[in-house]
Amino acid sequence: MAEDPAIQYAASSDGYLAFQVLGTGPIDLLRIDDITMMSIDSIVDEPHRDRFDRCLASFARVIRFDRRGIGLSDGHSPAAPLTVEQAARDALAVLDAAGSRRAAVFGAHTPLMVAATCADRVTHVLMLNGFARIGRAPDYPWGPAPDELARWASQVPDPSASADVPDDLAMLVPSLAGDPQFRAHWARAGRRGTSPAVASAQTSMLFGSDLRSILPAIVAPTLLMHRPDNGFIAREHGQFLAQHLRDATYVELPGTDILYYGDDADAVLDEVEEFLTGSRKGAASERVLATVLFTDVVQSTEQLVDAGDRHWHILLDRHDAMVRTQLARFRGKEVSTAGDSFFAVFDSPASAIRCARAIIDDATELGIAVRTGIHTGECEVRGSDYSGIAVHIGARISALAGPGDVFVSSTVRDLVAGSGITFRDRGRHNLKGIPGEWEVLAVSSGA
Image (cartoon, rainbow, N blue to C red; front, side, top):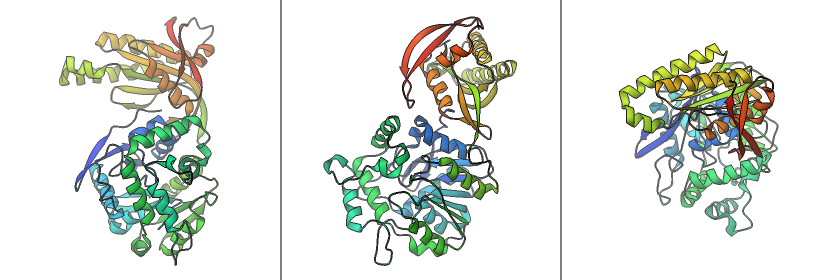
């Protein structure tokens, strides 16, 4: 898991919107999370959500943001809820702040409004389980009845108040509903995402929105992906869009999830990549056994205060050059860097340990304290990005380390047996987002 990208802010008509940019690909892709209400700063905490966006970023420059009223963006009054038109204007403000002149737009509903109102800014529209409206109407015989949708929206602030409210996780991502770690993340991120009143207001807006009248104004090529086995958004929603958009491709995918990152996410990624680039790398990313190394400057804020801005930036430049020198010396591959942190991979766990020790020693000479974490496991490789549970484990182990520490998993210890490297036990730990307890050790000598 690479470090979470920096939070930036876009000025909209009456407030600020938090956004992040991942990747440097030639295609800009604005991802709009228009069904759930979880902040972008919670994505890095959950491997499935994080992996999906980083895979997108292997072939596109991904821009994601918190909608108004969600997460780190400015709020709105529940009495004056956000409209789809305002949501579209906010999306364009984010594109402006991210320096994007034209972009593909990916979501389930709002991309239709963005594409209709600003055709010159939208290159492609991509939708998974998309819809022009969600509820049934006399001339639209699909979806729940209006009174059923109104009841669900009214019970969003306190789902426990009625036994009739469906389990939103089981409905939206059933493939992950039985995972206790994901369920805990879902509950935690949802509580932090927005207030109950705003959640109810935004749900009502989504349930009451009807964009059928604007479909003729959409000229961008549109990819309509649908999982017909999901239990809430029938395939007829997607087929309706395909019949009423002038340049639409309709594709049915396996799985039961409404959201993109759960069941068979690779099928979604492949369709998106081929639609945007003309080719796909394959349904499954390459899987390799690799040793991951994370390094991080400890107490950087305090050190910045002590050193002053100019001197600290000089130190960081020297630190970055030193880390890259040691990576080259020990045949490590830099995957990403963010601020004062590095993520690298190695073919050999012993080489990773020796590189970590060299980085710590050189950093000490610079007057900087560094901590490191190492794990070996199977990683998914898509483009130049490494992802998967093994990467998350390495990052979590690094976060446990202190200044000057090289923390490793028991897997690394077992693999370097006989090398002369010795370890001290640092106990068993629950790693955030990772099932089970993990034995953690500190390198003591021999590196």
